[in-house]
Image (cartoon, rainbow, N blue to C red):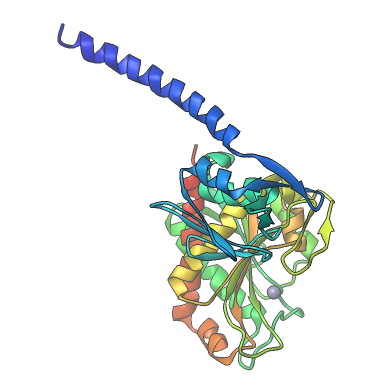
Amino acid sequence: MSLGIPIFNMKKIVLLTAFLLIAGATVNAQYIRFTKAYNKKYVYLRDVAKYYGMSFVPRNKDCYLSSRYSLLRFKYQKRSGVINGIKVNFMNAPFLKGNEPVVSEHDFLLFIDPILRKAALKKARIRTIMIDPGHGKRDSGAVGARFKEKNLVLQISNRLKTLLQAKGFKVLMTRTTDTFPSLSQRTDLCNKLKPDLFLSIHCNAAGTKSVTGIETFCLTPSGEASSSTNKPEQKVQNGNRNDKENAKLAYEVQKSLVSRTKGKDRGVKFARFFVLKNIKCPGVLIEAGFLSNKTEENLLGSSAYQQKIAQGIADGIFRYAEAVIP
Ligand SMILES: [Zn+2]
């Protein structure tokens, strides 16, 4: 008899919880109002804050959404923002509509929401990872005073492979020696072998020698402009089937990379790189640092720093895999 009551109560609690979840979802969706500007849909950040149960702090030039777990910064008329300490580049600059801060619907649905809320992501068991060390053979990539990109990215990729295998992942490589598979050979291989994730590893170079840091790219969603331009493109690519997953993976990889290496955070960015456009699984392209900067070049050439980069990328993959687990 003493058992009867708790069981009955438990059933009631389960039913009540289910009801609240359904009711909650309906209420939450109603929170977010849309508005149109520049031929696009925007959402009110006040409502986005409410949706996440965060406080909303509008200011003169920027706006914060904050909770115990998260802090988001939106700057008006600027595409650069911050999500939990990591720089991001929105597809469209947030702005004040009247007195109300707004952010584009794509930035909210395809970028912010999948980063903050794992329920927004497609569930998957991540087992096989394809690593794509950029360039190779006659294509050296960026060339520094001491090192060539094609060699450094292969070394980093091999370290990453070891770390992933140690955690039980199956690893595929687009090249394992100094060869040059064409970009389409790389993406064809990816679409034939069907890994769960694709990571293209690169190093950077810039005309200005003082430039340093790490950036992680995901494919630009259709109808939007990449981070380096203001020109939108409409064409839907293979990679666009995973816009949300690409954003989450790029964010987690960038966050873990910055945390492991203590390198300068240049942010999560959008680009339409060939490999990102043409793969059918979620994927990102990592620019691990600048060979045009002497200090960073020396770091990138050292085994200790290469290991930090590999560990950072691996951590990001582990966090992503955990987020999408069914
Ligand atoms: Zn490269």
